[in-house]
Length: 260
Ligand code: R5P
Image (cartoon, rainbow, N blue to C red; front, top):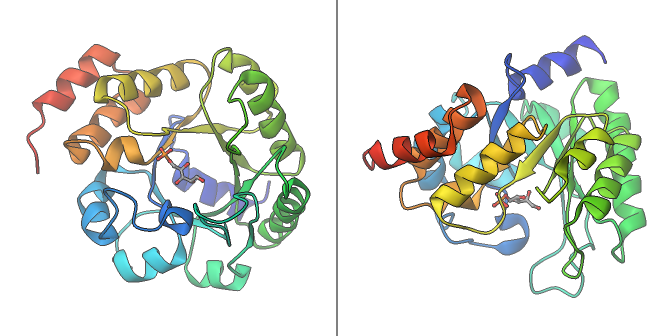
């Protein structure tokens, strides 16, 4: 791995080998998601507590202070919508030149294994990796799950392994039973999405389980910004991911932080 690529990856996955990425890219196919109606308002208080911010260039340009010291993971795939015919109908939507102009630490693209446009999304991942290698920018493959797909170790293991084989530098997936098997068979670091909003203590348990079963951390969105107290929630997630806090201790922390 070239120096620039390793350097950029180290902005995201910290010295302790772990990371708390904040995902706020939902609008690219969901529109104004609950909690992200005014992205800048949601993002600003969370920034000091996130290791990186995953978002689209539109929200980056309009809603994030360019001098904020936050590594950016730029979503560069899209072209679909929640009301469209086929979720997997995605393509690359941002040029590498623009990603470089935006000084990103990584780019992210979804692959849809087992869906109609599987082939295109996998080939796009490989093309992006070629570009990433050329300029020293890591590529995050997001293993997107089609509406009918089971989120089990067999399926997620298949998605993560294909992503790694195509050259992704790190992979985002979902937690599942027998998650160690997914980790074992994927030779690059894994981060986990939080999924739909669940009670805070359950989301903290999810963060605990993922790091204790081999993921390097979380790339969490709704369970942070849709929480009753988003700042307290991201701080509690950090305590688990970076400070090895127990679920009970992190939940106590969550309850103890006043709403900012
Ligand atoms: C998925 O395609 C996007 O990257 C989402 O923004 C991300 O997976 C969502 O994070 P969460 O499930 O924690 O809201």
